[in-house]
Image (tube, one colour):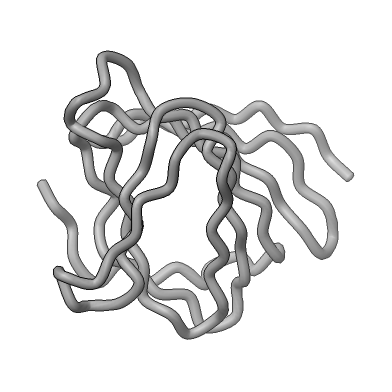
Length: 116
């Protein structure tokens, strides 16, 4: 296992790779209020997010009306082959903080749509 602490700035905020093992990875996301992580799909990666602070809206597929709100202390699971996107609540005064634990599938991210 490698402890990384690699910070990457993005238009939605930033993320930090916390740790990476042969079969898993963990990341910490800071999503600015109202910011959206665009529509994505992974063919092999499976992941679960846990909202540490704030709240996040998660879309389950390409239908813009098919979403669920995830509050601090709740988790959300994404299986391989599923579309997903996340948005921090625009009513928050600070970034939503989200931990992602996933299978370690490098180069498996397909960004379908960006929201910027």
